[in-house]
Amino acid sequence: MTACQAAAATAADDGVYVYCVARSTAHWLLGPIGLDDKMAYTVPNGDLCCVVHSCDARPYHSDNRQLAEGWVLAHQRVVDAATKAFGTVLPMSFNMIVRDGPGGPATENLRTWMTERRDGFTPLLDKLAGKAEYGVQIFWDRRLVADTLVQKDPKLRKMRHEALNKPKGTAYMLQQKLAKATRAAIERRANRYVEDFYLRVRRCVEEMRIDRPRNTDNGARMLLRLSCLMKKGSSDLGRALDEIQKMEGISVRFTGPWPPYSFVGGG
Image (cartoon, rainbow, N blue to C red; front, side):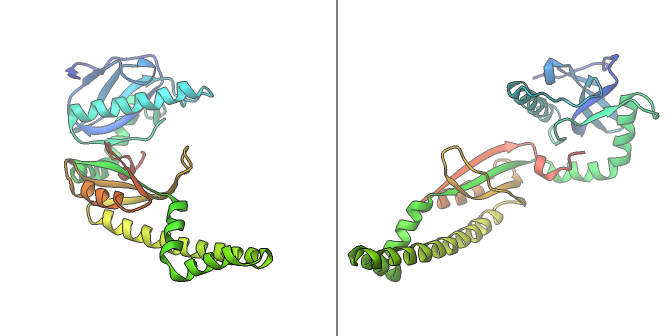
């Protein structure tokens, strides 16, 4: 989208919703692409600017899931447009709103906020130039891994054979013993996987954040969930993940590039 230089429109609203911080000295209009189709524009302060829209000074909240998801998508759409217009941006978290107050109108309070944080924003913009965030999720098929462990481990294989060929009472006890030993072997294997995969990914990126694994709709077990910062266009991480993907019982989800939310304070 081509941003046109213009004076930011004034509004009767008593707040501004902040999408991101970027480098620009002028007023720009990015178009009616904000939440609820609000006009997104910049508020400059020196060589920095914030991309915002005018709003009531109230958080965006709705019990309507579809509406709330639409707002989040609109937030991301504006950050993406700002990235195209200005290059590197510092994305803010959803629902960051600056209000009118004793310091003056919301836009003046926003400029004060930028001034107070300039010494942090400037080096962070330099650091993130030419980089993006990528998401890595690594899953495993626990049942397949368990079967493979039993097949390849002589002790576990022997226990399973005995459990299948003993009288019912003895077989039950052996099955319980086998299940306990298999769980312990699985946990050891999971720990080795996590350590191995973490190190492989870490060698390919500049920074990394470990996120809490999530359950998936299809029941797959997530071993590792990472947010990674690296140079746009680098293929090192993709190659490392391809090698991990080849391992039996392992699958990988790789997403990005995204604005570096995980590596920027939310405001």
